[in-house]
Image (cartoon, rainbow, N blue to C red; front, side, top):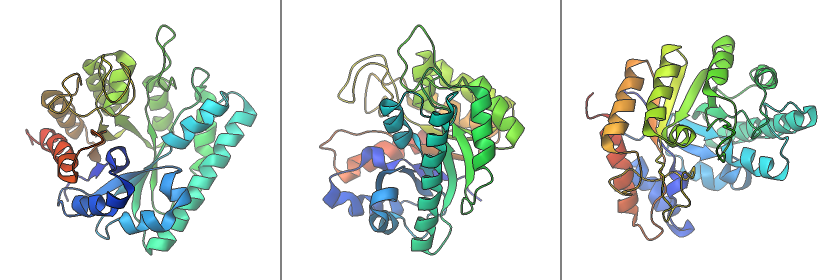
Length: 300
């Protein structure tokens, strides 16, 4: 069976009136196995619209809780599954329960199980505590996730001497926790690069998680040291690959290097998630994603 390749389509959404056409274009690509669904987003507010976008043959969609996690962290600095503050941790558990319930509604609407992974995160910024995170994961692992497997998505760890984008737990702490609980790590190339201010950090993270036997997936988003149309320097802004954004550190060589290292270490799925110029056509959006897919498979 081919290794699933997922698309974080929400990062490259066109105008609302073109969304259905964009999803159909993605569904027409034989190498696209599904999409990454942001939570809350349409999963919480436009379930019918989301269900209509998910092609019947997409059997490996994923859900990321990072949008809602950060929306809550910005309002309450103690919010998070890794919060040492019990009220903040309970609020994050309640948020995660809503995600679980909305996933159940989506599967009911679609009439099938269609999500392969749910990505959870070790918020809050600066305050994240490994013991609290482990307790939260132990709680949520007992819930009915409609056939999906929980994974921990690593975001940039908190480093005192630099401004964090997410500033959560270290990868080492997350690896120890998931190894004990029997789940996996999901990596985002750009978030790892942001953490270390280097493309090398992304490769090191692939190797570190892979050698511990917990690397489950990797999605390729870019990052870089300069301000661009996508935001300030070192933003967690899903920059395109270098071919489409010259300041991005994520070039074809780095993509191929990390993808092949991940494959060698048993990764279950790959993917791409990039922002695009606002005036890009649907075909241009697809081409930017296709370039990443091809770079992943140049050597294998």
